Every structure is written in structure tokens, then in C-alpha cells.
Length: 276
Image 1 (cartoon, helix red, strand yellow):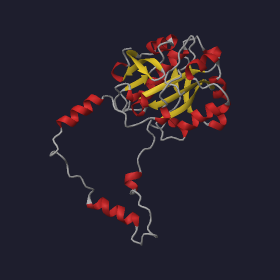
Image 2 (image 1 turned 90 degrees about the vertical axis):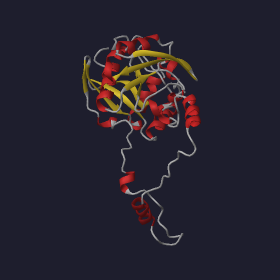
Image 3 (image 1 turned 30 degrees about the vertical axis):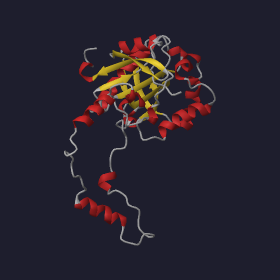
Image 4 (image 1 turned 60 degrees about the vertical axis):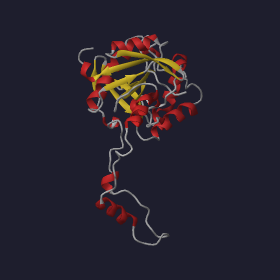
């Protein structure tokens, strides 16, 4: 089951196994059904807008469609200025430059399955990692998890964390507001989530988790001006993970019942980033 938790130090290890997969979010999720009911009651049926496309836009669509008979008509496609939108929902993670951290130069490098699958599979089969991520087993299990994100619309980007030139951690940077998490937690537009596991046993217990979480959260806020909050939901049982987030400048916001776990909702707020 896909993860929703991030890792820490000590057992620093790992993220969770959870219920909300970053690559397959339901963007129609809402924070409160009560507000929907209220809106529907307060809306006067006469207060409706007569919405229609401008004549110029209709003409552009007609030009794209062609004027031939039904058999020979060109399929209707949106004009270039309509479709030429930024389809990277996370601000081009692949272009994020290395950042200097207290433990060395660190960079998020988007996963390439052919190159990285053996390494990530090995990490997922570490018992400490598997307890929370629940992705142990043959390579196909990890591969399916990675490809589900890589073949999606860009709302989740799986990455290797490379410290001083060495891959040592696995990250998922995802749009929390477009994730199934939004069914259970009131989220704001552009809230960005983090999942993390420290892959190598030798790197655990050195407080690398909290140091890198702070640096990556700040990187997200720097690269995504529209994002006001960085979100995480570690399993409440994963006390080292919760402690790492607190040390990284996140605040404990709430306990949240998710389908596969009871989570600690952790938030790093842009206005508080220099205070915590």
C-alpha cells in the first residue's frame, strides 16, 4: 500500500505504509461536505450566470476542426494558447539545483526506473523501511509504485536524495491538495507534501533526517512561490519520524484518522520558516 509518511532519524529510516498514493490523487476531494451543503442552501436558483465561450474562441475551435464532412473532419483540439499550460504541477523538480545543507551538498534527482530500480527495491526490502512503506517484495512491486507516479500528470515526483554525490535516500514530492489526503485533512491550494526514507543503515541515527527535511522543505518553499505550507503525515507510531519533523521546523497540527493508519499531521508554514 502506498506511503503517506516521511522518515526520520534514529530508526530514521522510513516513511509509512499508507492509504494515499501521491500519484493517483482525486483532485475533486473537498475539505468539508458541510460547506457544500450550506452553499447549496444559500444559492438562489435565479442567481445563475449565462456563461458562453467568446465568439473568437468558438471561431478558433471551428478552424481547428476543419470544414470537411463528418468522415474527413479533423478532430477538435484546443488552440495552442489554451493547451500551452505548465503541466508540471510541482514547478519542475528536475530543474531544482543542488542546495548546500549543514551536512553537505544535497540534490533531489528524479528517479529513472531503469537506473534506480535495483537500489530503491533494496531499500524497500529493508525490514525497518518495509514496516511503514509496505512495498517489500520483488522488483515489480517497487517498479509499479514508481511507474504509477512517473506515468501520471506530474502531481507526484519520486526522487533520489543525493548527498555529496551519493544516493542515500528516497523522496516523494507531491501536491498534497490534489492527493486523496485532501479527503481527510483541510488543505490549501498548492500545499505540497513530502515522503522520505533514509535508505542506508549507516546514515540512520545521525539526525540526517531532520536536517534534510528542513532543507528540502525550504527548497520547496523557495521553488514554489504559490505554496504556503509543506505537509507531512507520519504514522503516530513512528515517533522518530515525528520527532524529526519537529526538529525540522514543522509543527504538529492534528491527529488524523486515515484508512490505513492514525497519522500526525505536520505542517511547515512559510511565514514561520525563519522562526521554527
